[in-house]
Length: 454
Image (cartoon, rainbow, N blue to C red):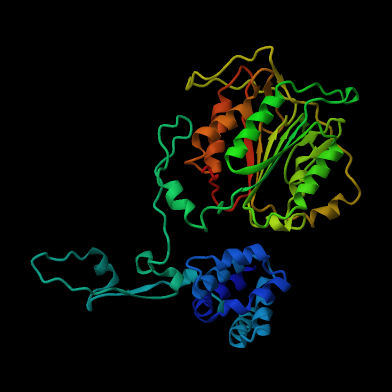
């Protein structure tokens, strides 16, 4: 949505919230693909679920729906007999085109506070009442201006969470004790994970590779598989494990999962344990190998579950955990003051999941594909290592990343959101070994995510 449409929508917000008949709009919004069904369900559940709360959320979300959102919305109003509001918005758009100054930003509008007569604005800020004088009574300041600029104390329906206390991610000495209780309860701040089971979790574990691939056996990976199978069952997921899949069978398993109906579920998880490499990409770096030595890009894996490939997961968090190398560089680290005694020496049982980087040939139509790639939404991809570097796995205890992830989930998943958990994982893994490794993630989640642990 361009700036002129956005400012017009905000100028008309109070009237739209007051008069909009949202119940008559849903079918029209769906037919014009202005919102998905899951988005509409989120709007219907906004606040107390009243017409006014739904209208307020609809107007807010409309700003995020692209350049044609306002004209499409106007046509929806016309189709549902709300011609007065449609005319209001249409005339505002025409006026803005003829005279850009007709739609001024809200920054130019300053609320005016009216208090006791005879006091200027400056005097109101510095005046101190004499305790010996009679009180002014229960006079409430009157604020003139757009509703969204009213002071928060005059709008009790606006939820403003308390500023959380600092979180000590590494040591575990302190955390925001109010976060789970206060944030989990607000649908606009945290994803709702109420369904039981919470969702599907697919684990692909590639250990044995064909000789022609040149890839070694990933000894210790079965330990990683067993740990995460147990952990995600504990987190209320339905876990399915696939072992030793070729690249084609990996894609088939992922496609089969995407074609399932996830509407009654709240979340989805993919875990891939394999050898990996760098790869050409537009959004998500890296690739993982099938047992036949053919690679599948992380980007392709993620996009299997986009809005068009898996519509029943629209608006729901989709999590991808990748234990594989991002390349073949070994990170020697740099000297810092010792902060932990958890580091361990790299021994003969530690090995990387790396293969050399190979730039694949670009197909003729790849540039055309760029314009059709969906914007990532409600997606988090957690990598075991920084792109370009190896990811270490111990033959006896499993990979550093999975071992740490499992322990952090067990200890902290009851009280912390996913992003905080992954920061703990990154900090703990970075302190291990002679060679260094640090996990990272591409986070396109819109809200905080708290796992279901009871």
